[in-house]
Image (cartoon, rainbow, N blue to C red; front, side, top):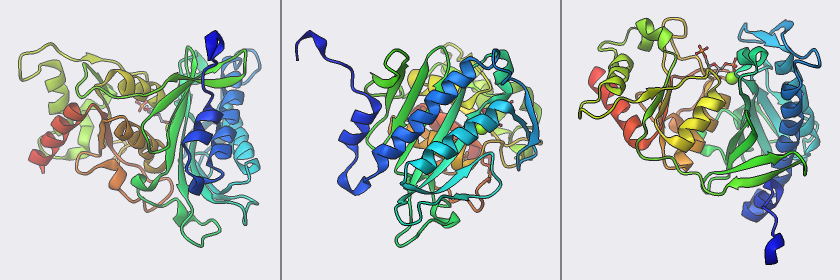
Length: 335
Ligand code: AHM
Ligand code: MG
């Protein structure tokens, strides 16, 4: 190819990897990527364009919406609807599923957290977008049931991190790859051709301020025991380091690349965990599992859970296989 070979773009990758049966998925992914480019720019310039701060509204979960929550949601709903392939969209920002006009052409359901970690926006800390894709059930024209499926039924999941660079990480069920936004070309170009999570890591990531009520009253306090083991390992090895951004996309991105664990357990304030099963836990569990890691709610693999409602929550521990296994063992001896 000589010395002028360009890097593979996200569109090229998706078109190459998607089987013929997943017709339309590359266009869907391109629509998400387009939305993420718009959100990356809006995030970067939030302090200059009056896009910081609250929107003065609440979402269905009673959380104050930030202006960028609303902008990101509007952008992605727009680009996804225009892709022509999406029949139903579930978003953190909308109480009910959204049914698009693509009744006859829509093949997919998309679940979304358009702007994750939005409490961090106003101090310029990295935030992200999380997404997952399901195929509609046979014969369906798009219903809520299409997306109330186990996480392992997803055919694609990913996130975009708006950090020191803009990175889009995706899995189409054949490993995990990452693309970095080339702002000159305006393209996501392949920068992480094969992401694999180390079997053991030296970082743990959890909001330790909640430790007095972790696991919401479960006897034996398995999460507290696990964190104590991170600090003083049984084998006398060095302690793990604590890193916690408070933006799931940033904390999971680091965990995916460097290994270790990211945990958001149940606690008194959130007895079922804080993070939403469908559009936060499932996509991240899908990615980390595809990267050779593991994801659990303490008692079962996250991807085997079936949500009863679109905004249902779940505790989560994900990351390096051996580290997550240690967490699971503490849970099983606590039952
Ligand atoms: P959000 O979707 O409303 O932004 O909330 C999810 C975020 C995650 O990004 C992060 O892991 C978690 O909330 C942090 O919560 P806490 O501040 O309780 O540690
Ligand atoms: Mg979120």
